[in-house]
Image (cartoon, rainbow, N blue to C red; front, side, top):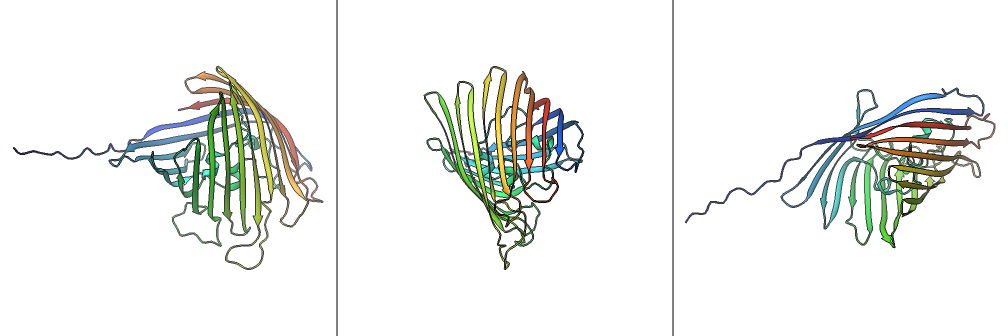
Length: 354
């Protein structure tokens, strides 16, 4: 008897599906410069839209392969800001290659917000940094640099609630060229550990991590980040802290370099409550950085508060709103208030998930 063996079943090819989100905002904001250096409009409309192309398959080896391409919808002509590929094993974890955020960005815990987002959001689009202030925002993304770099990232499987990750980026830009250590921000990496668990109905989240960044004309700096969250019966209490420390020696060059300092710290903390389709949050943030590399005791600072609410309309549509204040205080002497601004805003809008 002759046995005929057919070809082994091949994995299904990757088929892309479309996802993403759209946010449309209207709002009023009042900006008050210390020296009348600007005259911002009071009323504005803003938007944030992304189209996501997502695909996944299981290879013959059992590895799960996934691809993600994210298109920014609010840039003229469109722009791809994320594009990566991942290989995942339940036993060995995930390997991710492409334009993506650092692992430290992925796992950061900060203050909760159900509106335009406080620690990692768009408040600065309404109450503006006056330009000379060196504060860069409360979030890791602004401080560490992160979501446009070509990286290789490893994320471990989760053991007893703990997950470890590490990433490395040879260059800041995604240009198809070998990095020049003196011509750009490169040789960047981060690593972090997270924990998620539940005890007696209380959800617990923790994260701690380190990021390193080599700059071309401002030496290098390290970032230390930590955060924690507690959740119970609709309540969430969370906060995060970051510390940045700059070294003013440029790799491959002699002597110190001159640039605005990255020495400083920041934190955000808040509470949120959700029940049914309703949610509300209150959060506070503060950041402080040295005004110049050698200006010991002179810092620029930003203090902010935000009260937000949300209502789930169904079908992936939410009505959101935020009321907030922000105060930029500069400490450079004799600048006539060029790095000062304080203001408040009221913003509402619709968020649609595809």
